[in-house]
Amino acid sequence: MWQKYFACGEPVGLTVHTRPDAAGLVLAADDDLSVTLGVAGDASVSATVPVAGTFALVGEDGDIVGYLYPDEDAQTTVHLDAAQGDTTRLDDGVHLIACDDTEIPDRVTAWPFVQATIVETSADDKSERAVVAVADARTLDLAPYRADDVSGSAFDPVTIISSEVGWSANQNGEPVVDLAARTVTLRTGGSTSCPYLPKRIRIEGDVIQIVTGVAEGDACTLDVKSFTYVVAIPEEFSPRGEPTVEVFSDRDTA
Image 1 (tube, rainbow, N blue to C red):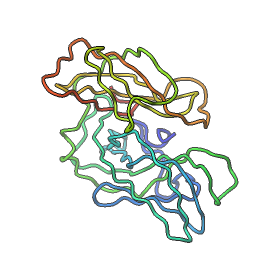
Image 2 (image 1 turned 120 degrees about the horizontal axis):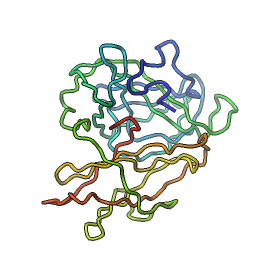
Image 3 (image 1 turned 45 degrees about the vertical axis):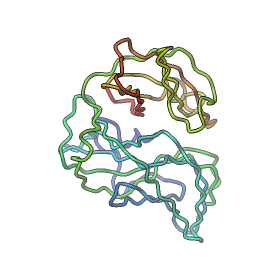
């Protein structure tokens, strides 16, 4: 849904005066790249949200050139009541993702946002749905994030060995590497009609990087679930140390 406003290679699809309706949720960005989610007026909202905000990065020509994207795909459920002054801070780490063949300048304009799934709200009587809360744009120095830029060598298509609804590989939801079987087991989430699934993979030393994206198909339903995917490790992967997995969620990463 957020790609409607912040798609790679496209101009920003909103202004400070035309931000999308977020069912009462309001977002503010903090100096340390955490974001704080609150509620406007006298509303109360229950929603499922990511554990960090995303920052859409705008180039000199006004087009999106990349993102600071959450390190983890994990989500949490929050309950916010404006009358109680409730807020929640989303402060997990983020990493730099560049759009295809795009040079990201050291200083950029960044739009912080969070896509949330509304579970219940007093702001209206609409059913459960996804919304995007957007904070004011700000200028960012990207130098500290250059080491995490995943725009370098190309990703290859991933080979999915199996998939199933649910997750039971470990309690913390982290990807599991099986070198003997040459597989990675990872968890994603989303609608059963258009889940996030592994799409591309590459090797960087002892690190396996996997890009996930929304499956092509019909409009997404609201039955959000966890999914388990087992994917093949590329033949050239031969780690010298403990292997690690980095999972990125961006359909436009090449």
